[in-house]
Length: 363
Image (tube, rainbow, N blue to C red):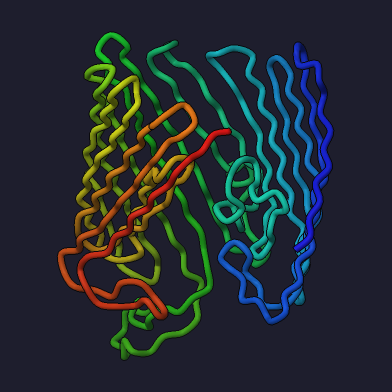
């Protein structure tokens, strides 16, 4: 693997800041490479090249990235652009454009600060709004796909899709209570198989199915609350509800209730984060996603479906100013035995978990 990165940036940041760069890498494998989720291809060659630009003013910022990736069988062009205007601390508007086809591999490793994998297939033009309804007390944040609002959004196959999100954040400084309420609504269409019993009300053998356009709708409501009992102790809780329905299946629902605590000792030389959650979903279609912080600088997105408990423990100890140690452990206990893992690690059971240890050395 060979790579090169060249960049230039302004030294005077008193009024404006500009930075730009170009990145390229060339990969050759001595045998066919199966790829990964973030680099999905089969072949011996993976090349990429791109350019990025960042500009920051007193009340605005702009970010642009564009790249081309190529392997044995596919060439992809990806682009992302964002503009933020924040005239005051109480209001901000933003615009974001994404064109990131599946299979594209960003030379930068991320797009607009997000992992490329998380925004793959996220083509769209989005508008965002952030307003302090009550300064220092209540804040409202929302975004929507502009095309879905002005025109019926669709992909290259003409299938419609929608994506809206609205969030309200509140804080009561005197009491130490803060929290948020997030509502997200999505809808779309895809080509899939549908049972004949759902296509017609007549008595037809339900084992018969055919290709059909399947409409899907999903609604997710998440409420978080935190209480800073003291400088060393924070309590937190979450409740999340997910409703999913398609024209090919009956409506499903799932929920998650989670409580946790964060303990800081020694200003804060030692940090301990504990949480336990109970989840229940009808099936994978109504699964819930839970983000968990891992060791320092890492995290993971956990998919929870079925019924069970999820527990996690994370601790960081700063031994000296230049040495820190962290450990993260998580486990899921299901109510009933099920298939866990995949491939060579596939097994049947009720419990799965992992432990990560990390040392950080600062020179």
